[in-house]
Length: 325
Image (cartoon, rainbow, N blue to C red; front, side, top):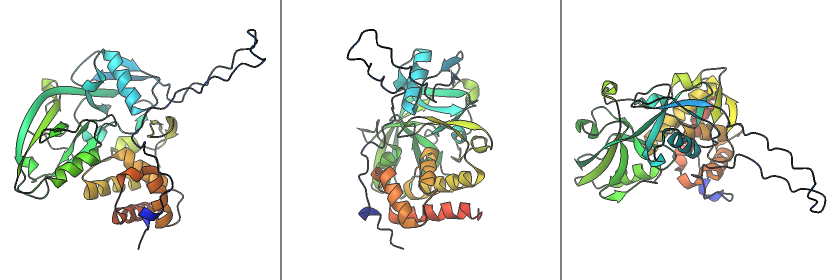
């Protein structure tokens, strides 16, 4: 079914990766023609994001506290301030575990009782890889602040044979080209476009870890059951607009998000629960795939999703609504 996705764009934003939003509205001007005795403006209402969370560095540290953030970028800045480290040292965060567990990655939602562990830069390593197959077997994600890293290594894949490449490694450069600041789908596209039969160089930075934290290197990237439990409030960090406190996704939405995340890996070689949740939300009140395509293009037009992918996502949302999962 033709979706006519490219013909229905309606002023898409060029700031899909902008995460910082103002926490408070500007104060209203005083009335009374400049009278110095005029009543002061009413105090600004506190943002929903002003909640207190506890945090530690994953390799070991005292417990810190963070609050007053309304985006992923601001959260990383608060964590860096709490531990007096440069924000550029933080690769990613996990929730409720210090381990490099891709099922517990911090994405666009934080449970109000979640404990945040920050994984910071450790050893840098350079690896020469002969691309002997079309697929490397990597799934890429990013932390929302410019660092792409490996979320999954497919078993029996080309990269799985190279033991120095591990889940959680930040990809700093490819063939000498710095990819810091690139989104995960851009990094995945570069890797996919490398010529078969050629050798390329990866510069990676692994997360710092305590000795007792070393684990098996293979981890699947799926939606954590703990993050979709019913009746629990969560802080939703949005790419656009302020953070809001919401209920966890319903069982139906959680199943749709999980399926869409799997489709992202299949089509684009990335995993991104926040992106999958945004796509499911865009299709919540849509009646047909063309309406969904328009809404998706307005919200996420910079991704330039292929029409067949959009159609499959619409099908996944419909299947979840009909209880076919």
